[in-house]
Amino acid sequence: MPAASLDDIALFVEVVRAGNFSRACVRLSMPNATLSRRIAAMERQLGVRLFDRSTRRVTPTEAAQRYYERCAPLVDEARLAHEALGARAVRPEGHLRVSMPVDLGITYLGDALPEFLRRHPGITLDIDLSPRFVALRAEPFDVAFRLGSARGNALVARRIGVLAQALYAAPAYLDRHGRPRQPDDLATHACLHIGSAKRGTRWRFSGPGGVQEVIVHGPLGLNNMSLTQRLAERGLGVALLPVHLAHAATIGGTLEVVLPRMTLPGWPVYAVTTSRLQPAAVRAFVEFVAGRLGGSQA
Image (tube, rainbow, N blue to C red; front, side, top):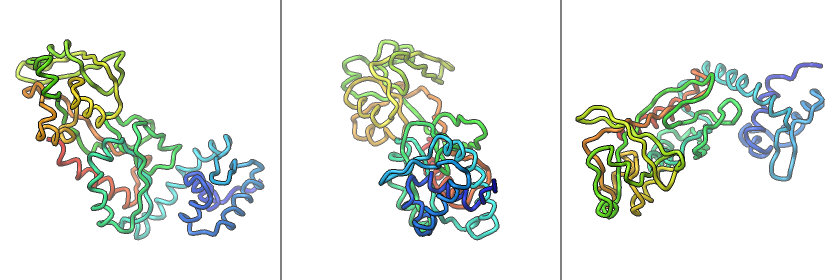
């Protein structure tokens, strides 16, 4: 059986990433009929059906998904090696597929994205906001931003910032339940935190008396910082929040800093890719995000 050409493999990878032939054709600047004919020729050549087709979407078959996971990194490396010889290596342009946590995207980048697009009119973005850790080698993303951890084998992670954190609660809640004077006092408070309400979580403090760890519990475990803040403002308990996120609420008086003399570890932010060799567009976006986080570390 003759081997499939790298060009045809690249077409197959783009169809999987786009989810249908129409979007893939736009990205490839190729007529739909031509793309469909070449994919059909691949299927005949390989003797395997690559896609289950519907009127709106094409889905890779189980065999094709495994094929995609092997081929996609090779196609990307070949593309990047080619771009490294051309203008795109130094001039940011092209289409980027980005994954990032909801709070990071809305709180830190929502107002700034227009500025990025003005600076780089040759770049288009698909941004997926989700709390999950996407599988970069199996899913169509160029870069993923992660909070707290950079899990993943054979991935390249760069720490680009730290989100400073503090404890907050509504003044009305503190009037009812008392203001904690030391970390141990939190054992009698409802604490809102990222994670499981059933298991609780461990908060680590540094202060005049040294380092202290406290296991706290509360009525809710959450995976969204904005919702955690909203519930804290409604008087549901003490919340651990990024300082930048809670700043407006403290100025407005709907939240009050709890244990202001204590320091909690910051939440590191990572940019994660599958390779150290990245096109200029990815580098430009990562640097832009890093710049935005630079003002939120204190």
